[in-house]
Length: 194
Picture: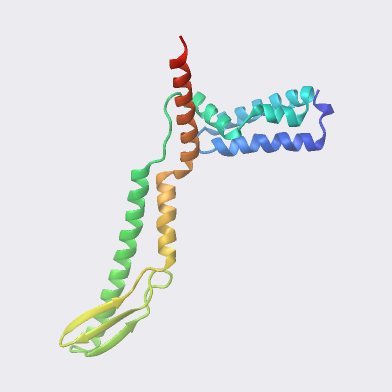
């Protein structure tokens, strides 16, 4: 039956199979994903032999919605939403570690100046921590020290973004959104039935 399929048809089918697999990759266990891939591949090849690959793929519909239905079938009504609180906590953790490192570096620089001269006067420039903070200027006048600068580099903000996305598991949002919308549609259809 599959001998009638051309290489282009097989490639279209494989593309659809792997797009679906990518959509459910973070939700379904490995064995379940492999079973879904096999099932979809066999069904699409059989349908493509009957009506052609283009029509078989058109009848399949939106792959993201199909992926959401596979996840719903696997987990039932338990929609796995992103963990926003965990993402925010991870952002604050990166911020706290970065702040502590920059503050420790500035304090160590100030202590080094005081160790070299007990009563320093003037302006001293600290180069900062590479990739973490910019330079800072420490000014000593009448025994008091004032620090200006030492801002974070853009790499720290990228690390915060990565921590928020990873900790919050924001890649779950599209599938969870589709599941939620599909559930709303089903509930509305069930309510309209007599």
